[in-house]
Image 1: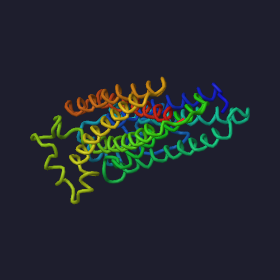
Image 2: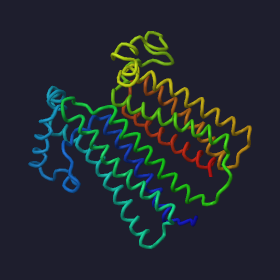
Image 3: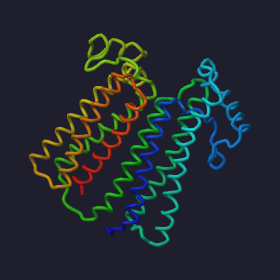
Image 4: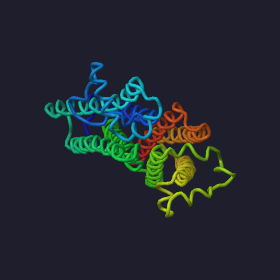
Length: 339
């Protein structure tokens, strides 16, 4: 496979932009800004309202929806307050547009110049589809908070968040294919463990979305046990009618699953690390495994602190950012164990 630095830089730039978008998305969620823009237009929403009259019109439109009518109407919510939350949602959507342009315009250029080999071209079409689908998931999520409930569906929020992580990971994988064009025999025993660890990590990311969507970090703010010194608090089983609903829709149940899977992720990465030491790995594989261990312990610590301090903005955001770094290390390590 031909190594083209321009194509590699283009793909890695996409990774950076997706990372920035997820960070801004985290701020949008943590500042309750996601429902501030009540409609979506591909062109006319590119810039925020440019006059006081247009701002007032946007604010009046916002007042027609549940978040204002059921929550903010009681909070002395002013136009200035509205401008603040509008900014974060607008900025989030703007980055989405920038990602689209950064992907499509260079893609057309590289296509015309025949700088993308057939294998990479197929992957780029997959990325194009993933980007379009992610935009749809974003609006699908926002729409759920504009009907009756002044909050987005935590299922849709998690879908939007997790798919962003998947898009990032796949973009990075395609870039790594070009960065390391040589092929070598995979380390089968370690690759199997790395795949399992990746799947469990993605499940943990899904539950991270559930925790965010349900504000489940605001209950049971103790560690290592839940409230009242219980490993599984009684409330885990009584918030919803069925066990499945408790573990997917109840604050306590969702938090219990998220904090428990954290132990599994740490255990799997440690198992992968020590198996790698026994088998003997090359420099790149060793670097990946070392990064995984360091980042997973950092992420675990941040998760505990985020819980204990009841999700302050900076901690919640840092926890999400480090999750990105952990997925980056996992993707890199799996790639180096596979090809």
